Length: 189
Image 1 (cartoon, rainbow, N blue to C red):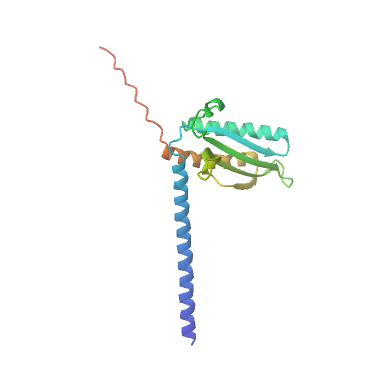
Image 2: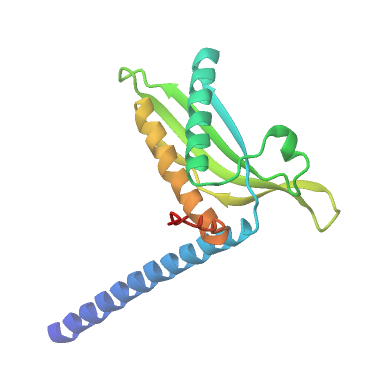
């Protein structure tokens, strides 16, 4: 009787482990598939307009953080050779592609110079609803929501990490054009 019960426990444990393994594998596969769908949604993009929105405790803090994040995003995109549209150019580009960064950061009362924060990065384009041909904004790429606590440098690094994932996905489906090599001149004899 004890032997039979032992084998029931062994088989049940093995089935539970197998189910956990298969579930984890399925979730990982679905996540890869979702990431690939996001990449394909930004295929053919010719660039983006940078939009940063910050919510903080004071207007001064909002403006300071907004300027810092705008500079950070601008620098990363330029270094990656992703075209950045001006507001005027944006109005003439089909879909009006925008890379939006939304940040909420409040000073943590428990720690000096630390913030409680959350942020999200999204590539958004204009879309038309099929059911009524109405205007909508479609999220073509999304980092998800990130929440944490840390100094301003920690927030900036977290944003940079997610921004680099976007840049990697963007360049995977919109490779940089190969620049022709400049012909080297040979000195004449």
